Image 1: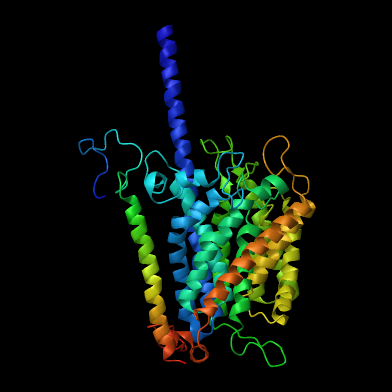
Image 2 (image 1 turned 180 degrees about the vertical axis):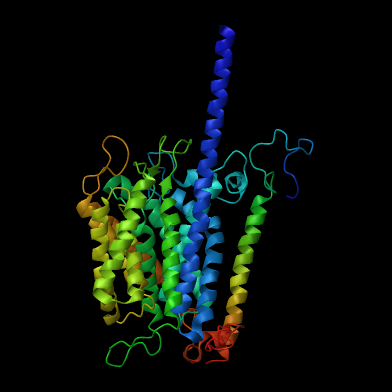
Length: 461
Length: 57
């Protein structure tokens, strides 16, 4: 009898071991898959930006976008990851109550040198740090791409890359540390809830872009002497619309990566959770992402009938509901997103009347709508616990408003100051003659359309 | 800095933890060289860009 019990116990232990290993591999695979999905966002931004550029700038816009991607990745490796883990309690680097933050903690896991390098490279005992870092890195690269579209056709390449490093390595990461971390002071003190990063990714990147645009100025020919604006259409609307659709595809990976897998030592419990530890299901994302896409498209169609704004409406729809994708009722997500689609174009027009030349509407789609989404959640989601445990702060309009103001400030201040310094160094804007000639001619050793865009050869008989 | 970082007879048997080149020292050197490459690339890129713009002033 004792032998049978011992044998049974051994079998149970073996099964538990296999179950744990399967869960660990599932968790690793879960985040790994989000990385190529999020790279689709960048394929989308690449197409979107090149299509939205005039033909004379098509390739230089692409070069800029590709380089932002390439430089943000190492920047996030070198210091961005440390910012996320080190500063949730503020610039003091103090440790938070969950024991997952502070300068000392970050020093032990997030530098590519010393003892912490163990967690910043291949490690058979750590199957999560690399894929988790990878997912966060793609969030960082997304912020740079959001800024990238707004500034096309007149910004210098290296100046732009430096701004992308600041945004992707520091600005959004600081916002994430404060508002997208269980130890973040905005979460603990104000009950901030921004599950899908409407504010801390989209709005921060957009207001960073706005700060840059103030120093960069409009493209030549955008505004007349009386202040009225001219349309400077891109050379390939189908390319732009396809790019927007690719961005939307990639956002499934982005939002998937906002979920914390259960059952691991670093998990919030046995099941899926948000980054705050609060419960979520992937079903919630399926319901609400699809309904918000639909709402955004329909809202934009009602107002504009324009395919560019309809596809932007789809993106705006997701962003508007992103803060509460875990808790919205699908029809409510649709309503919020519909509102975003309707206000999208008028908000972009207001910005234009203020003399801001945002070439792709990034400030509006990601910034205005990101803030709109955060505040809407504060109204309709008031009272939800923002974290686990007794006495956790709850979601409120005031808390969401405080978070929105902080995110706007982080983006705007760092974008404005960074671009101001570059302008003083002569590294921000291209010379007027270069802008008029077209940036492809000036600095790209390749042609976008070496044969022009001729009519197709006759079809076969 | 180079080569297999575990001193256990050149086998994977029993190997745990970090397995990257430099795990036994030198990872930081690689990191700082990579940082330097990025900075130098930006400097060279800026010089090349400025030279292009100088022809279009």
